[in-house]
Length: 426
Image (cartoon, rainbow, N blue to C red; front, side, top):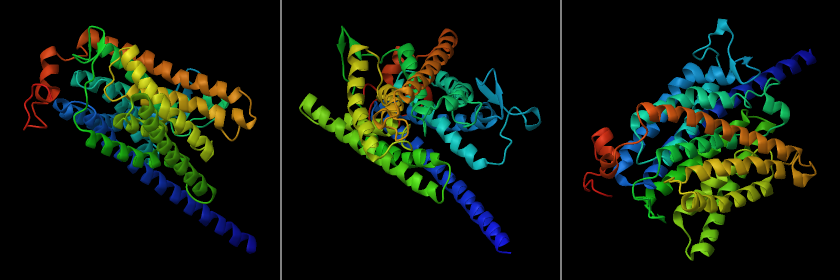
């Protein structure tokens, strides 16, 4: 009798924990959904006012197109039960349907959908102000349908058929799976689309300031908030030890963001003589991106170290990409997501409590983290180049000179977001 009662109690507790886990994932997904607003505000604030409407349209379409295509195709490629081509991607059995979501864990579909939309949105900022809206829509659809789901299937299904899992790769919430993929794609896109008119003239690098730092700062705060769902929700459970673990993930996330902003602030203060606002904001984002891989694998001191490195690295990277490589990235997306996504993933091999270099684990995890992250970046670079090359030769990537100078809002959407100003050069 006692054993039956204990068994019934255990089942009840397990059921409650399962329901609490589903609730936590749903709440976290809602927070990540809200990050789209943050990305929109950062991109709008860091760029010219005459392109604000175009940026709004691109960000909302990333979410809309990503939601539809990931539900229809992407989720099956990323989480299907059958591996294809030696684990290169996955599909569901024929009786479940190769297309369209067919399982009953709807909350997990929602959670993974908003992650997919995040990867697409990263590209938007790097090519803001000069890209055809129609071209961007096609690329966003391909990224959310094929590019992101295939590479995502290399790690996150968490089973023995996934090579990076077997190798011991650690990317808790997606420094590489999401951010480095988006950053690698953004790098190729920015190169192929080319710089904004007037950005580089006669070997000189010209500053084209954003029109509203208030919007940019508000966007960073929204992203910071949403990241607690991005990372904390990736615990994928709530109750007992999972509650403690999720709490630790959230604290690590917050510490890395805070020290990333502080590091960027003091580094630019020393370097430029004044603390730079935009770099400080990007320092917070760099810390968030960097800790995303290791937030469940490092302690608070490791989180501080990763955030510190990324906060300084993002300043050096933004300057190097702009002034040395002369790649025009208006919002610093390549540096924040690509460079810091890679750095954060690799540093797990240094600071991980279990297997990290400084904790006696040797260099094996560091090696796995390095080639794993590089694999994601290389995949994004190659596939993005192929897609954009085809689009360039067919419908084109870039708007005309007149359209760029007068603003994409007027020419692409027949609207002025700021009608009180003229459309010459804002």
